[in-house]
Length: 66
Image (cartoon, rainbow, N blue to C red):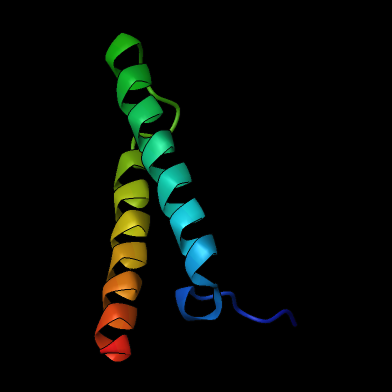
């Protein structure tokens, strides 16, 4: 079995990279959906959930650092 990769195991720099990449993906999904029928209609929701998880972990780390 492989180790489950959670937001708590990644570094701060990796969290920022995940956040930037996911926001860019969400932006491209929004504009792609405006022109035609999207392949995965639930993709924007999954991306927003991922963004929320990253932001939650960043906030928790900021509170722990105080």
